[in-house]
Length: 195
Image (cartoon, rainbow, N blue to C red; front, side):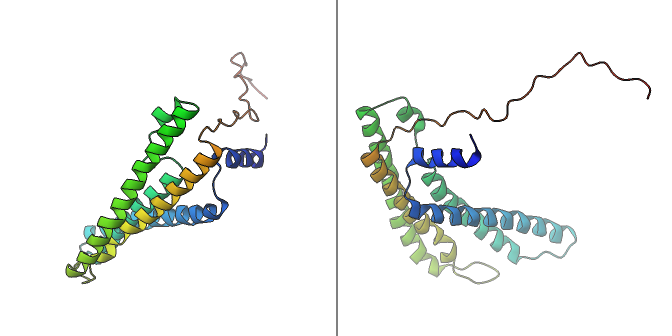
């Protein structure tokens, strides 16, 4: 089985809306860039402090990159069922009991998404009264990540609910990869001496 066949099989098993595949890819690339930028800014912060000429604005950049990476990463993980998802309970069930548990789990996640949107927006509005130093930008620039993540988590959870209710939550695992068997190691090989 080729890698392309496995990807097609995986797509059939996860039953996602194709329109969100591109959004997921963009968010994954954005998370990668945010994590890379975070690591780079921490390195520059350490180097500039070590040489005795700190760039104070790097702490603002570092915290912004970190916060956005966390919240956008949580949204992407929700789409991939890697976060905010109780797999141990639901995977042990089949049929109607699994459907009920899967729907309840996703309703709880929708509740979390609603709280992120509602209270995140309230914090965002209140953030215009506090400012970050040394730049003087409103702290609302950090709080904006919270309702954004809530919207994305809610969107991906509704997608999972619709697909799960209409097509089922049971997804068989893809077959194991048999393309590259590992050959046994021959321990009886004698070393060669000379030319």
